Image: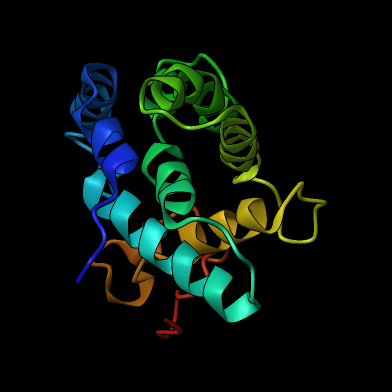
Length: 166
């Protein structure tokens, strides 16, 4: 039997989360490249969980999903020129995590992972969750099948630009 992730579901149902995702959706209406929607967040969650399992790291599934579901919620602010979505998203995530019942240590872990997910691969990360959230975000895109991939400014940064890895 599959376990229901109550706290992750509370995040998904939170009016603020829905508002942030709607703002991102509106901002990306004309975007030709990858979108930052729930589908992307779930892909990141599943890959991050897989990477952490393979690495032998032991995090509660709801912590991993919490980080992945919230990792891009600051995008709408970045589109408005207010700064990098990673740091902005970490600040927006805190009250959502509190409202969903995540503990203070879990909130600190998740918000650090969100704020660090745009770092370079060889940077120092505060946890394996931070590192693998970054990796999952990169590997979640099937760039080699993208119709506009040749025009993408990130094409040389994405591991799956030419072939499938995960």
